[in-house]
Image (cartoon, rainbow, N blue to C red; front, side, top):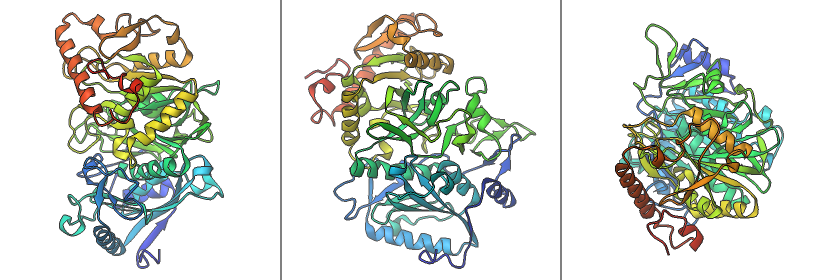
Length: 525
């Protein structure tokens, strides 16, 4: 603290959740729901702002980071120095702040130390929920010691600080520091650390870092669920019949999968107690709920009200889920699911992938950005996000794809492409695939029932689609079979295939023929 010049600031260190909730309520920065969860409004930003995320361009990062104009934006060292100096000056004038020591990575071999300084107690509660505590970790060496400085009240000056706007998230690998300002959206904290691990683990340890959830069955079979926010990672991995390893970020070492976090960060829009009982029950004392609206005249959350944002969220410690793996570590996976929310209504609900197809769809990372997850996204928008997590990948996507490809080649792993969006009719015309039916398909894939079914080829994309699945209506697994008017669907199918082709052009000279020829059948080498 003396190095950070916070000597005149009252620092509240390592407060527990009760104390942080009380501090938030005392300062009028939140309200309690009828279940005891703390509800806050994150202000202008209710989602991440990828265009305002920067990495310092210095000796450490110059030749290692995959610099581009989409996600890995450069910030010159002189701008970073000015920004850090001014942010520290702002924080040193605060009457009080909240700090905690915490960790990432449940496998002690890859433990990352984190010290967080927050302007508001609710942000510190988020860190308490999402990261591992010193008590959980014990005495272990770390692979690095990082500092996060987060102050929503500090606004950057783009002309002086080199940012795009007043809000920012900046990573310095040389200084092992993350600066966050101008935004109260807590997700920037966790995704900052995720980006750091996506840099350190593949680079230094050969560990595949992944934007996925993970769970483990009674037979010790680990399953991974890749996908962008809003595609169902948390919902599908939180299964009462399987132990949850984690809901969002993991590492895959030689023979293990381990959670990066100590908590979960679930979307709550449309939350249904019947289909998502574990998440619903986790919204209780100690949980932090963001940007929800209460039912009129009550403090009962209206989970269907998107007045503030579609990206309503709850963070809670992983032990709020009854059925969890302790510690948050499992063996190498037996089954992998690529989750995509297809707003075009083209892709089948589930299809089986070959190894080459798995590599292709991993690099493609097709989905639709779900409303509210990022600033400015108000309805599903088709997109391609390499490795199902491009905004958080400081290295070139091929680094992660090569690691995945090697693991798939060396092991007998079943890979499935699961559409959790629309099938047959597009967004705005049809209904989203029900969670009930998706769960039934995932369960059948995990227990081997789906492998026993007869498969048929899905045209153009050349995907293998099961004809039947227990718990799913007959005829609904292939969207072509369920449509009365086929031509509009075929037009959308060809349009989506063309989008895949255009997106993959940046990879076509980097992959082998079997991967390239796994593309939809418009182009072949």
